[in-house]
Each structure stands twice: as structure tokens, then as C-alpha cells.
Amino acid sequence: TELGSANDHSAILARALGVPAVTGVGPFLGQVEDGQTLALDGSRGCVWLAPTPEQLQELEQKGEARAKERAAVKQTAQRPAATRDGRRILVAANINGPSDVAHALDLGAEGVGLFRTEYLFLDRVSPPTEEEQVDTYRLVARQLKGKPLIVRTLDVGGDKPLPYFRSEHEANPFLGRRGLRYSLDRPALFKLQLRAILRAAAEHPIKLMFPMVSTFDELVLVDALIDEACAELQGEGLPFDDDIARGIMVETPAAVLAADHLVRLVDFFSIGTNDLSQYMMAADRSNAAVANLVTPYQPAVLRAIHQVVEAAKSKGIPVSLCGEMAGDPLAAPLLIGLGIGELSMSAPAIPLVKARVREV
Image (cartoon, rainbow, N blue to C red; front, side, top):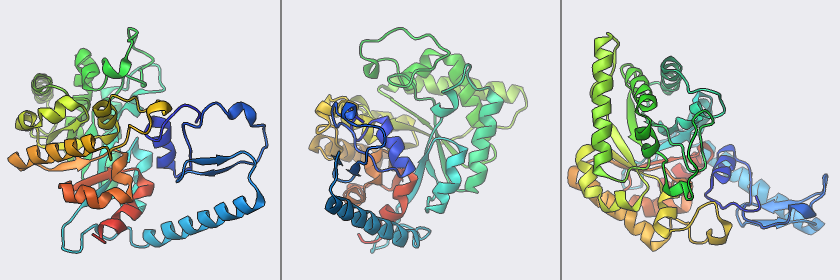
């Protein structure tokens, strides 16, 4: 609350839960006493330590108006998100586990565009077994009843360390071993997850996605590990999908600049604007002092999105966007205009974004 920004993980969690929040407020919590009444406006980033009755009344009215708007758009949430001229936009949900699926579907999700599997690996004393993972992926897929599911492989490192693996201290962990780099450094752990996803994909429409890709060589190594996993599963007589669709998160400047090269080894791109913004702008998204720089509306970030879409067009593969920008109704016309065909977001944002798409 004191030090964070609107794009760090605590803010993303609050947004997913529908909890109004303000971050980066500076060292003020010491001034707040237990039981003290505060007022807060998450849309403007304002906090009042001693709100007047008039301020409270104004904020309550604003909250009621926001609630009425959410209730109204929820009535149409199950309708497709199609523009006035008939362009269909798939609106999906970002989830952390099976318990998130029913809520997302109730709010109009047309699939899961990002299953953050790292939450299977955190808050435990040992990594999940292959069978545990298979059961989890199948449970999510069954609830979706044929709707698309994109499973992102383990995305840890940076500010998400695994407690049961000793990691050397890194001066700049966000620029260190995280995402796909972390998984490739631990091929046994990685292959276990790949096996589980491949097995679950034998029964359900599942796509595989890799985070924090920077080089073509990383994808060559991934393909080799998938080939090994397929050979093992075949030898063991276990059913699996030997032609699973593979995609990458585009969230580093290197992936943007090499997108026309990387497109040769993938079936889809998914742009992660949270990390892409911080890496493009060289500004830590958890640092309130540079929060004004870490926005996907920066011209450099918008140009990066456009460049990725153009690279995807060259091979005719789809591009989705699954950062927090996807859940911003103001961004919908811009992203549609740039050529994004799928938006994946925190579930509470889905009804309003779908309604906005239908106005374009």
C-alpha cells in the first residue's frame, strides 16, 4: 500500500477480488489508528484520513453508481463481444486455480487466456507431483466444458521464489533467472510439468504457453524437452496430445524485436503488458517513484504491441493480450484497432470490457 504501484502483484490481486485499492501512498500508515474511519477512491488513487460527512456522502454515491453500472453490464455478460461491424473478440479470464473458474464463467468469460500455474507451486514444502498437476489441469478444463484454456508454465523468480529450492541471491532478480529461464535451469521440474499438461490436453482443448521468452534458442530447448516428454509418455502407454498448440508470453523487448523470428516456432503470441511495460520503460513496476512510467499507454509500449501484431500477421497466427491493460475498458477500442483478437483479464473486468467492445 505504501510502496507499490497499480501494476504490482498486490494490486493485481485486489483487482481480481474486486477490492478497491490505492497503492504508492508513501509512509502514512503509522498515522492511522485501529478503528479509524478512512475513505478511499481507487479510481482516482485518493485516500482521506479524516473524511468529512460531505466527502463520505459523495463517495458513497459514487460507489452506488459504480455498483449499478456493474449490475447493468452483468446482465449482458453472457453475450458475445462483437463490434458493431461484426468483428468477434474473445474475452477470457486470468485465473490462479480451479476455484476461480466458476466465478469467471458467471461473469461472461469465454475461456481462460492465462492459467498462472505458479500458484500450484507456492505456499508448500515440496513441488506438486505430476498426478497432482494433471488432476488440477483436468479440473479446470472440465469446468470450462470445451471453452479454450491456455496454461502458462511455471513463472517464478523475481518476487516469486519457491521456498523449497535454494536460489542464489541476485542483485536484480527481475533481470535474472525467472520465468522460462528458471524452468530451463531445472529441466527435471520443467519436464514434469510439461508431461502433466500434455496428458491433460489429451482430453481437453488446452494450449501451452511459456513466460519470459527472450531468444529463439530458448524455444529450441523447450521443443527438445517436449519431444523427450512425448517419447516418455508414449513409452509408458499414457495418452497425451502430441500436437499441442504452443505460444509465448511477449513481455521482453528482445521478444518484441525478434517477434518476426520467434513466430517460426510458435502457434500464438500473448502480450503481457505488465512486465513488457516495466522492461520497455526500464522502470520497476513495484516502485511507486516511477509508477507514472510503468503504463501500457506509453508510446513505446503501444509501438511494441503493434510490432508484435504485425509479426504475427506474417504467419497468420493469433495475438492475445493478457496484461492488466486488457481489463481496462478505455483500452478496448485501441487494442481492437491495433489488431488484438483476444483479451484476457481479471474476472470482475469482463462484463464491462465486453460491453465496451460491443460499442466499437
